[in-house]
Length: 571
Ligand code: PEP
Ligand code: MG
Image 1 (spheres, rainbow, N blue to C red):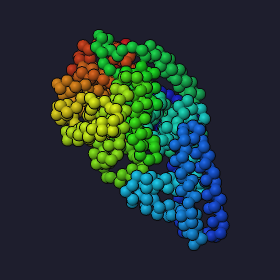
Image 2: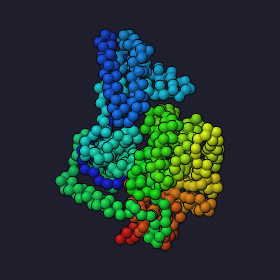
Image 3: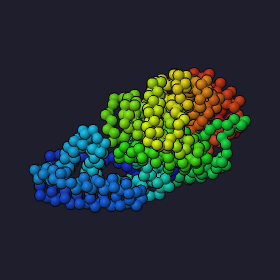
Image 4: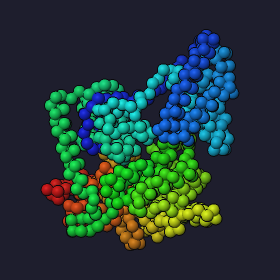
C-alpha cells in the first residue's frame, strides 16, 4: 500500500499509466558518419514538418485558425535555411544531429531573447519548443497523449502542469497520483475541479508503481492500493456506489439560497481557472465566482495572452454568469506557479520572492495589459478585481492609481468600462492580516486565502510533505488570524469572503459563520456539500462551537473537537 496526501475525494479503480519525464540524454561528441547523419537529419526534418502540419490541421478544426497559425509558424521557422543550414554545417563537421540541433537552437534562442521586443521573445519561445520536440523525435521519445488514455486510467506523474491537466478527459481518468504536491497545490485544485480522486506526495511512486498495474486510488484516506484483492475491489466498488448516491442526494440543494438552519444568509461562490469552468459553477448552483485564478490563462498558453485574448476570456466568464458577481484575481505567478516563457530567474526562496503583485508592479507592461482587459470586460458583468499576495498598503494604492490611469486612457479611446469597479485584496500573508484594519480602509472587499495564509503564518511550505504535519488551518495561530481579519472587515463594513480550501472544510464551518464570514468560495465540486453543511447548523450553535474551539492551545485539540461537532450536528 502506498500512502500520500488525500487531495481530492472519491475512490477510483483502474489501471496505471505512468507519465514519465524524459531526460533527453544522448552521448555528446560521439563519432558519426556525416553523410549518413545528414540523411538522418533530413528524413527526421521532413517527418517533423509533416507531423507538425497534421497537428496544425487538427487544431484548426478543434480550436481555431489563430492557434493553428501559431503551429504553422513553427514549420516556417524550422524550414528557414538560416537555421537548417547551420545545423547541416555542424553535422558535416562531425557533430551528431541531436547536438547540432541543440547548439544551433540555443544560439538563436539566446539571440532572440536578448532583444527587448515581444515578437522576438515569442520567436525565442517557439524555437525552444521546436528544439524540445525535434530532440524527442530524434531520440525516439514518445509522450503519452493524456487526452487519448482509455477509460479506467489512473494517471501517475511526478507532478501535473496545468497544460497536462487541461488534456484530461474526466470520463476516462479515475484517479491521479503524484510524487509531489499537497492539498493546496495546483494539481490538487485541478483534480478537485475535475472531480477526480487524487493522492499526492506518494513517495517514489514513479518507481514503485508500474505501467498497466491494477490499482485503487482512495482520495479520502490518501492511499493507493496496487494489485488489490477481490475483497478490496468489492469493498471499493460499494464505496464508489455509496458516493454516487450521496452525490445524487446533494442535488436537492442545487436550486436554493445558502442559509443556516435559523435562516442567516451567506453567499456561496465557486473557484475557477478558466472561463469554461463557469458552467460547472452555475450548474452546481453557485451564486457567483469568488476566485478566478487568471494565471491559468497564462500557464496554458505558450506566450503572453494579448489584451484582446484576455478581454474575451474575462468577458465570456462574466457573461456566462449573467449578472452574478465574479471576482477576478490578477496574475498570481511565482512560488509553485511557473510560466516558462516569462523566464523568471530561479530564486532561492521563490515563495518569498518575485511573485504575484510584486512581479506585476515591476512588470507594469504585463500588468497594464491585464488591467485594461479587465476594465473593458467590466462593462459586461459584475466583475470585481482582486489583488494577490498583498503585504502593504502601498501595493494597493499603486494598483488603484494604475487603474485610474487606465480608466482615463479607455475613456479617451471611447471604450466602455465600469466606473465604480470594486477592488479587493486577498488576505493571505501575516503582514496583510496584521494590517487588516488599515487595508480595510483602502478596498471594497477582502478574500481570505487560507492556502497561503496557513503556509506563511506557520512558516511551512504548502507543498512539502516532510513538514505537512504543521500545515493546518486548525493551528490556533491561523484561527486567530482568520478571526482578526474578519473582525477588521466588519469594523470597516466591507465584505469579507474566503477562497482558500478551508472555505469548504465542514469542520471549519461553525467558526467561519461565528466570526461573520459573508462569502464562501469553493471548488465547484464542493458547492452543494457546503450548502448542505451550512443548512444544518444554527448561528447560535456555531457561536458556541467557535467559543470553545478558540480556547484550545493545540491544533490537535481543535481538530478533534471540531470533528466531534460534525458527528453531533449531522447526526
Ligand atoms: C490561497 O492562497 O488560499 C488561494 C486561494 O490562492 P492560491 O491557492 O491560488 O495561492
Ligand atoms: Mg494564494
